[in-house]
Length: 103
Image (cartoon, rainbow, N blue to C red; front, side, top):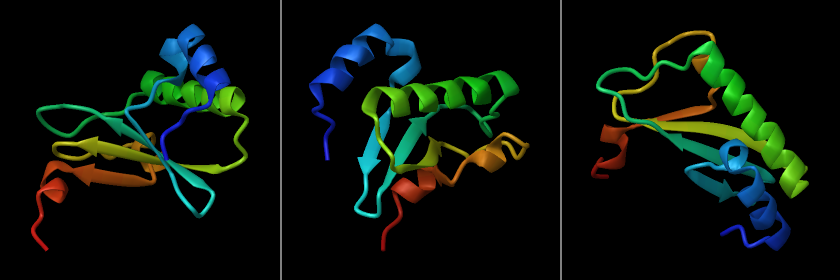
């Protein structure tokens, strides 16, 4: 589903830094997969400051859209996430090799 909510788009323009995500997947199980795509030449490290920024963006997104759905945080990176306390809050990691698997 593509977000076409006019109020959301207008507010998004006003809060551009607090509400933009790389990819949103509105699932049938009342969950929205919120995907962040980051490039790093090794493991991507989520810092305390960046984790706080992500949490603020989630609050803004929930407020602007009024959604009651749960969120699933997904990070897409070439090599994965550096394992620290902030990375443990991520629900799913997708690495570059996952995107090119032949099944």
